Image (cartoon, rainbow, N blue to C red; front, side):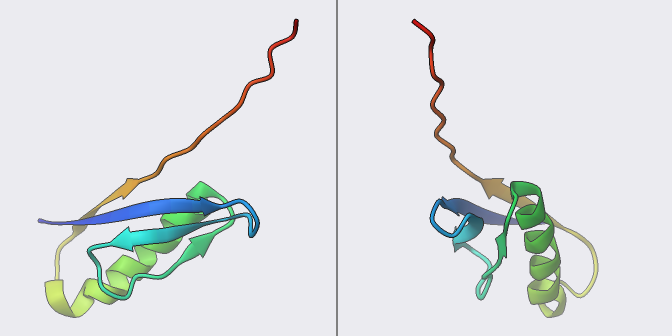
Length: 74
């Protein structure tokens, strides 16, 4: 089974998740939420690889990094 690796980033100004890099050539999608982004990636990868794989499935590994801040009451 083919494994596609997608590195996701978040654009604070635009408020969207996007593909920073991927081993799937031509993969360019965005999503307002991480879940929407993952659904878009799933559909786009299936479309981009349909001629390469003909039938079967592809496993998609999405790598994302998030930084959070918590306010601590004094």
